[in-house]
Length: 393
Image (cartoon, rainbow, N blue to C red; front, top):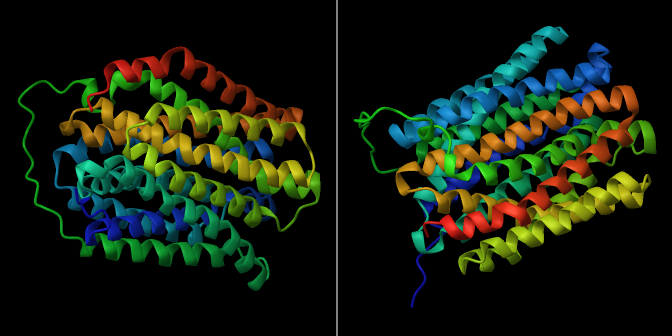
């Protein structure tokens, strides 16, 4: 039996759009704590508050994004969100104070949250149903490549422009514009708005049947939120690693890409729980290594191990959400996992900042490991059994 074509024109375009969105995002995220500290003299807890605003706004918007994506033409939603995501990068260039930067950063979370929901839903729409799990896995590679290239290029640009952070904001502005152009070039089937005939319920904004899975993914996001946000400033202040952020995220991305490629076959054969279990068990060891070993071996070794684990875990969880939802709630399923991820990352950034300020970085990284461990235990006690009993396909 001939397999249906996965890499069609629309899938390639939305894959590239997702890369551009996450590249423009990852180019600046790891260095923002340093930028805020060096430019505005922000303390660690203030940095945590400023950066949490972005995630909180994305968290607020994403449930409504799922409803909009399920109700209105996908391309229209994608283009509008992509435009505002592009335009708000200009705010970083204009911000002359910490308060102004915090406002623009917080507002930027809204189009980012909505754009990622719309793009991931379009990716599922344009992929053949027989290869959906595989499509989800490969789609995530665009995030992983952005994670590898963004921080590495950021370090290079920062050196080339003598520490001028605004050069990074300009590159993010340009790459997000390329993503917007690709949004406009896509040819998707028209979807007319059909008003709801029944009372709109909470389930139209969040996949209620996936609340267990949501708790699990939020725990894993909490851990990643702490590491991804504070890894650069921790490496500089505690380990004397000044140019290693790019390598850290590069190793993490290598792990992610490797595990996604090797795990795609398992997802195609619907071995979702197996992939999730494997990924979580690998990741928790990575967080333990990072928290316990305060040297370059722990720093870089954890990056690769966490990448290997998350590359199996995240696409498996996304497939769980999709398989628990009817086709009419595809956007809601996507927004639900992203909302849960945002909630975890936001809490991680905030609590990580507080822990770092008052008890040191090591306390924040041990908190990351503890919450990750709770998520693993909860998965084996509740999530896996619930998914296998309630999946629709």
